[in-house]
Amino acid sequence: MKKEWILLIVAACFEVGWVIGLKHSTSLFEWGATILAIIISFSLLIRSGSRLPVGTAYAVFVGLGTAGTVIFDMAVFGEPFRWSVVMLIVLLLVGVLGLKMRTFDKEEDKEVGEA
Image (cartoon, rainbow, N blue to C red; front, side, top):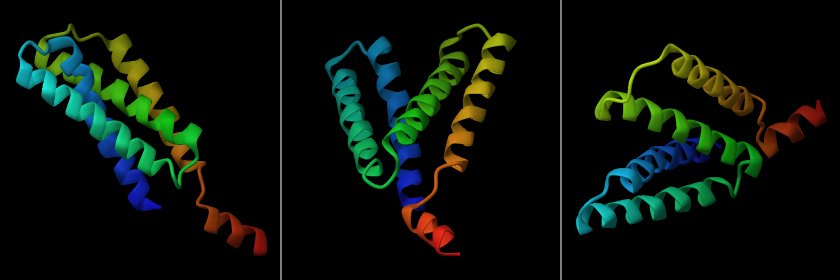
């Protein structure tokens, strides 16, 4: 189960890459890298979703991707820093972590039911 969560986090990192690429790509190479990031991102999301609940996996994917994109935009492209945005990202990440903590493996559910 840990493997699927790691794949999902990596997928979210590639999501940050392709979202930034959609906005800032200007050359054929950059567009190619953006398309490759899209393919890798969704392939990893689909693969991790084979064992994780789809709703939780997608929420974590989008939440981490959104937070990463906003932070990257502030750090690299000079988007103005605003505490309100930071607090909303923290709230988003708390929700994502809450979903992850409430998602159990199917084998764990069987063991809990047997006890």
